[in-house]
Image (cartoon, rainbow, N blue to C red; front, side):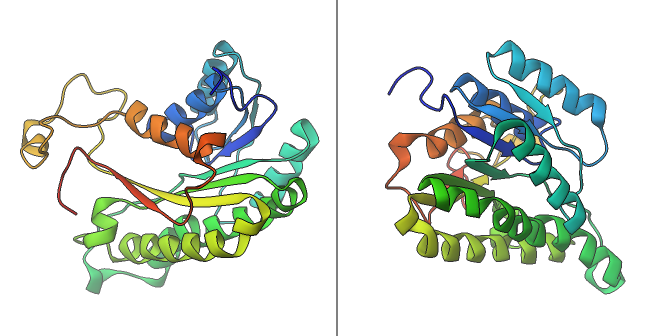
Length: 246
């Protein structure tokens, strides 16, 4: 594989203003991608990600918007096509993870999580898959999470939404594999925020590797899944968690 195997490709990474999303966006730029940076509120953070993409040799476009809103997704798609022609790699990283006891949850609490994590993944895939089908090449990378897979205390909406994302990913992998498109899920373990200077000892106790992951650990796996070398990997969930039991 060449140093920049994704030269000429364009990626859109939702929730890429910080942490895992930012690390993935920069990693894809290092692999040769143009990158559409997305966030719902913190434009300054997204501009910082764009600056890092440019420094890595890529071209960046900031497309602010909430993937939970159909009109925002449509506008993001229009902006991406207007700048780069099409999106070849879709990374659905955006999510909300509020804690609230189930019996205190309102419809708005539920919808606010599911609309972003699950329906947002559906809407972005629907928006960008036609271009991937036309080009006979594409990558969709969705996100789950350990607590989402085994149950999330006071987090029923995110557990339900992420289980749904896993189901959506398996369906997409089957339907679109004949078109040269892969769809996979990354399930991160306990990842240290980019602003943290040390691991949390209470959290590392359950990790066999003995340390928390960093955003770059997730970005490395995303970079592989987006690469031509991952053409035969589809419909899979890859846990990146230091060996922690799921």
